[in-house]
Image: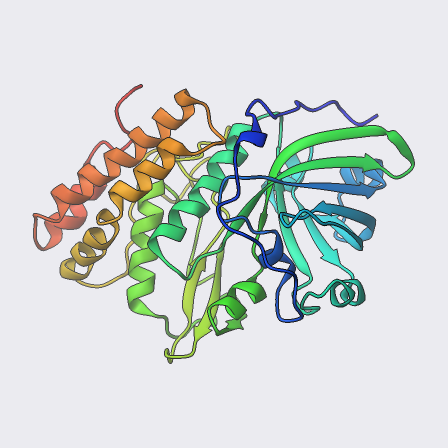
Length: 353
């Protein structure tokens, strides 16, 4: 028997409106582009599949599924698909693990979408704690403010129906992540698949910006050399690849119950910030700090208006981010080694709420 999971729709989603009109699908439009609302408005999807096999077996093999989507345009679409569980830690510990969805190419073409962009990552409620999913989605949205070379995410109201027992239905909050290929297409770039240990050069400015962003959200669960939680795209005007971070559930901002720092790091809690900086001089670090602090007002205002967290959770997030902005501004007034030292030695978990 599949365990009952907490239903999460305490917010009145019907009051959230889409911020832009959605065009009729065309052959050069990806499925993600068509469902992306560019707002906190959720898209409703229904996934029909054999749930006991999906949840309990958790293999790397796809299994058949049928997916129905209530498109933002008002049109309802159906697809033949395949789904499988994914991830590492969450695949092991979650009552309902994250999924990878593979839509059928011919049906995407028939509906007017690009067939090549057919695979998507779905993040869903792990253990009846939808606020953690909402916080991770917020992190993606924050990075959208900082860099155009970032993954977009779309909030979802997901209904899972057991194909062997239609009465077995579960509803969850989740979000869909733009695929690596779709991001590259949007940025008029080429997706680069870099294996661990094979990275020779990187866009230094983007790397510095990303490193400071990871410090801002309290995330140390990434490694450039090992391509861990980082994808790469080759922009047309660049001779080296650009890094794009993803997977933020181990960040201090999300503060998941299962998240712990790597034992090699000198911190005991994920909410303790630690700067993983290989970006060169103090002047480079100061420049990157100033770049991100220029977006402070936009980021904090969005967090305050964010639809998927309670006022208490929003206050905790804002306090955690405000602590970073205060640290960053103070550090930018220093010089030399004192810049990094001030970031590493300061108390960084923010004031209590």
